[in-house]
Length: 315
View 1: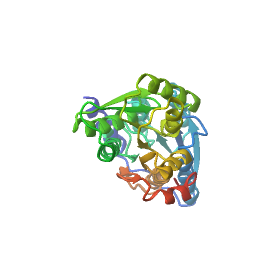
View 2: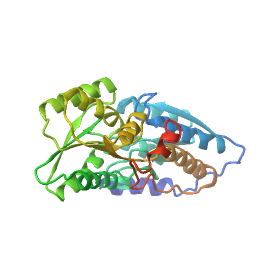
View 3: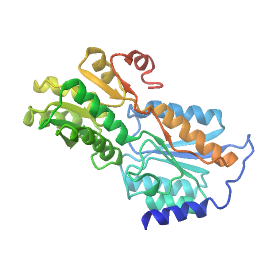
View 4: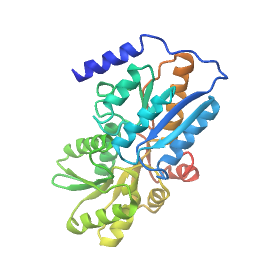
């Protein structure tokens, strides 16, 4: 029933074609990032979004929800009240944003998801399209790589720290990793560590002190990946590391051999193509498409130099 209602909302909202705007008429788009300003992961995403906005005559207003569902809904309501032409949102909770997104679509304001989608995809939320990683496929890919390279087998436990375990990206990445581990009879232990680096380090070291017999670490987000090597150093535990996202600390770990591989979801592309698709829909009526960024690509010692050269900008 929930999926049917969402489909009905989208169908009714799109019954009237999007108004065509003149090329020289600016478009107002609000982009809502779920985290706080300054999180390193979002720097290339914001660069991509701003680059597309400049190319396509878009007034882009980037707002930060600070990991607060109420704040994110308030930002959406304010943007709609101000007459914004379109919304770009991270759907990091499966239920909290359903009403707000559906109301926007019902009122004629198009919404595109980016970076994090509802775990049910289009069946779970009224957004028109999603630009971002396929989390389950990516989790399975890094899980298989760690199994094959490090001999993870039946009965082994893999530590899978993540910023917020209830977030959709965490649930789906963990699902993919566990799918790979199920094939050999191993288990993933999901632990929330927040996105504040000092707290991430504390949570990871505490876990490792009590669970020094783990077989590997697969960090499900950038922050635990950034702190994984230091956590191992401080506890004296020695296990291989793999996971998600790109940062100088992660690339240094790949160069040294301490990190096996990381999944590259290409946030620059998420920012650029979400803005571009929404702008083209608003201006020309071109329907936005789902776009999987990064595919199943891994960064490892064979190809990390390109990511090093672009780190902090495009990667």
